[in-house]
Length: 311
Ligand SMILES: [Zn+2]
Image (cartoon, rainbow, N blue to C red; front, side, top):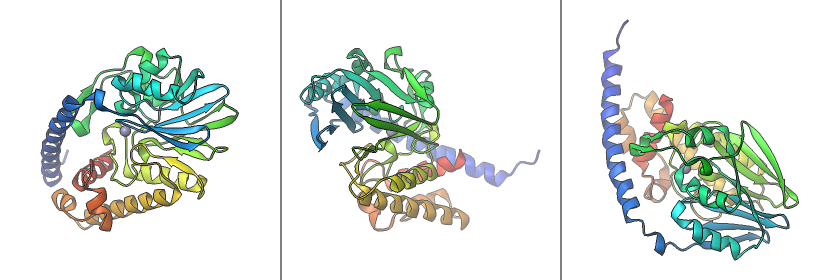
């Protein structure tokens, strides 16, 4: 077997660099978790329509649909917030909590699953969410091992491509997109209410975290966003996984920024630039400073894109 020593050397170098970054991320992540003061987290409720609301606390945005049949939730944030989230739901509706739909497996979206299941919610998600929540996961980006979730926190109903739930007099469409933020993403679309929850396929006004270790890729995200842009109109209310309540115009900007980043990285690779050079260059034009200056730095995004290309 012929060994390409140049490629081998480059891959080793990339591995060492990735390890350095992930160790730093792990320290950062652990510090954040250790400092988490759950008592000080306030749950903010934003009204979207007469029967749709968005909850913000810590972790992924929660969508709530209420109606005559009860309550449907999308995502559940962290376990220590479950009582506060339940109180917020009860300030909107006395109805039974029937369904909890998960947009993907990450703990900042599924940590409260067990608590909501205790309140009666049936958890629904893509097949790969159940698979990942049932086994130990390595979050490569943070070099952290995530143990399997308790049985009660795992989805009870799963689907492989798409699924429809009829509830509160309208359809909820669960649309799966391959290899976007992870390999188990679902976008939840309510055509009658004209509301869409995109999970972490959409970080509004900031660079996204792309979980390459869970099968996430920038091309998958761009593809998913393009399809949501196709079904959304100017009145559609769009709930991002993180960031403020949004709309089609802002989603279009997000798509264009990601496309710019992706094309710049592909061009740089084609021109023979090293990973270090790619991470140091301006990938996102005028959005680099503001969007890349938040939780996901520009160099982190480059890392996620490059790791995704390895998949
Ligand atoms: Zn996520």
